[in-house]
Image (cartoon, rainbow, N blue to C red; front, side, top):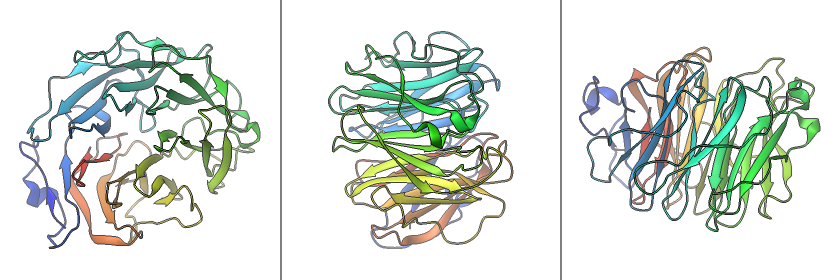
Length: 376
């Protein structure tokens, strides 16, 4: 397995010190580890069809701050000049790790970004304007959502549909639901939000949720339930009719009487869609068509494996990255594992010497050439 770490890399040592891995000859894809810009938190990376990396990240206090966007070309050695995403200053919440912004790239290369601010609780959206900037942010929610503490998620398909999902309702978590606002005009205008998850399953208001379109017309949303304020298992919403109706199924149970402050991610590849999540300090992923066959990285956590990030390349290889550390405010240490198409680990587990920033997360993506990138 060959890991590469482009330089310069902030005040870190060179790749040999950063990565605790080894070199294995063969066809195992490369993994590149990058640091987000200085003082950045809660990064989210995506790669367009040209191989350009796009990164959004949060800067500010725990309660109020701003989102920024930078990019990096396929042969670039540094991030571009930051551009502020939100048009209203200090209108983003970044307590972490379930806050900050979420981003999607449509086939035309347009960026779609969603986030929230908790004073008062409101959900926002914007899109890139084609000139290295972003349009005036749109208010998507129509009421104060009360004690919800997690940011929204966004995804876009090939036909101009943009979907934004979030937890909502100022009620106890056992009665909260996942809401959706959808645009049929590439994000220019959105319908009024409506509930799409079963009321009986609840929604854990301080756990993350994530959405993705699968290229075959379906949209998947992973979220954590809160039935009876105890049943906080991971759940999956799926629509195959452009968001008109949704199915809901349990991914994995987790009965706990308090919010675990856990995150989730989704990744699409040539063989389907993968969902990644945490249960009781272990991270895992599964194909959405085979949720009864989850895969976890070998070995054991030193503290708690959390905040998993999953990506799939064009060949069907999977990269899973996560943080290992105690408590929700600890980003922990960065670890990752590659898996082949059958879910079998490929090579040794990788790790980084520098810690993930407090309350932050790793983010991953697959390049067009089949290699992977991790940003933290």
